Length: 293
Image 1 (cartoon, rainbow, N blue to C red):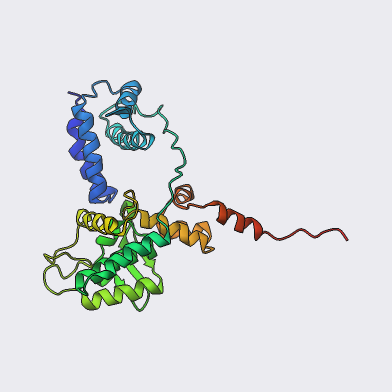
Image 2 (cartoon, rainbow, N blue to C red):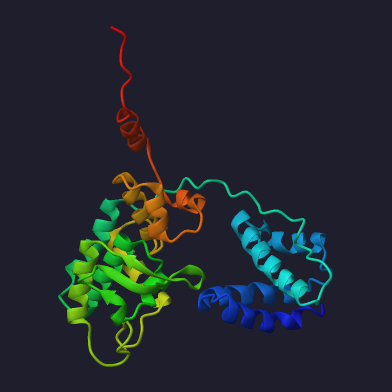
C-alpha cells in the first residue's frame, strides 16, 4: 500500500483546523481519499492519478466527478509535498475537464407554487409552518439546504431583515440580508416553533432536535409527488430558481453572485437560466439608434 495514505487522517484534521471546511465537505474528502486507498493507487504518477479520477461504474466518470476527484487529490498531494512526504505533486500536469453547459431549467414559479399549495393544504400545525418556512426561505435567500439547517434561532434578525453570521461554503460566516417576505415567514415560524429539545436550532423535527438534510429530502420527495412536479426537482433547485428569478427581475449578475456567495461569477452564470422570451425582452429593451432625417 502506498505509504502516503496513512496521512489521510492528518490531512482531514488539517482541513478542519486550518481550512474550516464543513462536515459534509470533510466527509466527501474522506470518502474519495479512502476510495483511492482501496483502489491501491500505488504509483503516484500523473498517469496513475488520471486513471483513478476517470474510473466510473459505467466506464469513464462524468466531467464533474473527474474534476471533484482531481481537486481533492491535488489538495492532498500538495499537503504531502509541503510536509516533505513526497518530492513532487503528481496532479500538477493534469487539467480539469470541461463541463458542458447544462440545458436544464430550474423549477418554474408555477411548479414552486404547486408544491407550496400542497404544504398549505394540510391542517394547520407547527410542522406545516416549518415546511412552508423552509421552502420559502430557500427560495427567497438562495441558501444551500445545509446552510439553512445550520442556522440557530439567535441568528435570525427579523427586524433588521438579516441572517447574522450565517455559515456559508468554505467555512465563511457572513451577514446575509433577506427579503421582507422571507423575514415575515421566519417571524411566523419563530412564533410557532415548539419549545424543548434543541433550543438553539432554527429548524427542528418531531423529536425537537435539529432537522437534518436527509429528513428534508424525504419531506420534499413527498411534497413533489403530491404536487405532480418533475422527479428531478429537489431542494437545491430552489437555489437555481432564486438566481434565475433575481436575474429576470433585473438584478445585476454581481448582486446575484453575492446572494449565492459564489467566489467566481462564472459559477453564478451556471445558476442563471434564461429562455428565448427573456432574451427577446432584453433585446427589445435596448436603446434605439436614431434614424437619419
